[in-house]
Every structure is written in structure tokens, then in C-alpha cells.
Image (tube, rainbow, N blue to C red; front, top):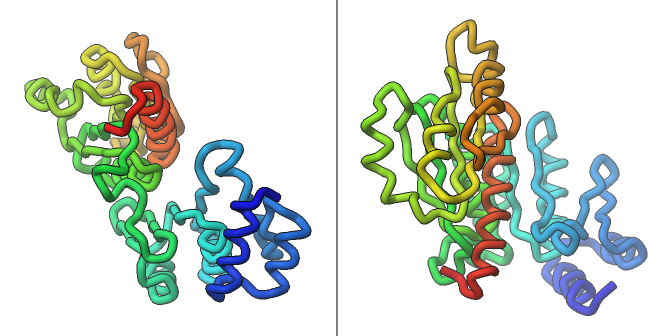
Length: 264
């Protein structure tokens, strides 16, 4: 275990964020917080650049509380996705510095009450635009936005510029033309990522949503349409996977900012 890791553990113990038994176990098995029902990967930040993200769906509030405490004790800001309002209400009482997005169903908690990553302009790494085809795509888009914020990049959300009103997208192009990456969230036939891809010189992460009528097949039509995009800069993630789209865009933005040698 490296000195900074040992220091974080000691600080977590002194702050009451872990028990003596947890402290001893973490020293014996660095990189893993053994919570019984969960094995929290505390080494992921070193390996992959960012801490583990928590998928909250079907987890108990008590399990989530333990996982959050383990991450915070290790100095990692928390991001949880697919958090229900009931889960959020209980968790925010235990973690009052947290922030819940009911539309995106995401919950973020800073370390030690400090501002969340990406909240301070001087600390932001790169620039991501998240674009929706319609208002019904907003929950998936908000999940992507909060993921990018948690990763510390600047993000803007551009809503309701789908291909049914083709004049709307060019009018907003100046807002995202210089983005490091663009996330495009669309249901129905999934045409918008191709249009955006033909307008920007950066990677476009297409996120199909389950929005649409019967023949959309729960987002399968949009997924297949995006996979067949003729725009060379479009890549596709799973249906309703706002987190995955935001995470990939955040990684791209970080690498772009590093290549520029400065934080924009």
C-alpha cells in the first residue's frame, strides 16, 4: 500500500468513517473493502482513472450506505445511478452534503463536504455537450450529464433538437462545435447522432433510448439505426445507458484536456 492510500485510511478512521476492524482489514487486503454483500473496488481509480460507480437499483439503503461510506473513507466522491426517490430520501439524511437529481435518478456525494468535482470552473477538465432529440429523452440525458459532472468536466445540455424540426440543431451548433465529445440521446428512429456527427470534429457517443411507439421495440429500432450510422465519428452504447455515454465522453474530455496541457 502506498503512503497516500494509508493516509486516507487513517484519516477515515479518525473521522469515524470506518471501524477499527474495517481499518485493519483494509490494511491486510488493500484495494478491496469487504462489506459482506459487496466487495467495493477501491483500486479502480488507480487502474482506470476514476472510482467505482454504484448501480443502486435493487440494492437496500443499508447496503448503499455502507458502500458510500467505504468510498468516502477512501477519498472518493460518490456517484450512484438509478437511485429511486425513496432510496435518495433515506440516503440524504445520512449524507446531507449529497445532491440528488430526480430526473436522472443520480446521487452524488462530495468528499468531506467539499464542492463536488466539476462544480468549480477552474477545476474542470475538458468540455462535453449532451444533446437530446426530444424532451422524453431527458432522464437518460440527465444521467449522462451528472456522470460528466462527477468526472470533473464542464457539460452543457441542449434539449429537444431532433430531426423532426431540422432548423433547431444548426441554431445551437455554436454552443457545442468546440466540444471534446458530444453525447446524443435519442429514441424513435435514432437519426439525430448521424446529423450531429456530420457537424462536429469530435467523437459522438450515441445513446438510444426506449422512447417511441410499438415498432421502436423498446429502443431496438434506435439502437440499430445508430449502429448503421454513416457518420464516421459516431459510436453507440446500450439502450438507455446515459451513464455509459457520459462516462466515455468524460474520459475523452479528460484526455483532450491533458493533451492541451491545461484545464480549460
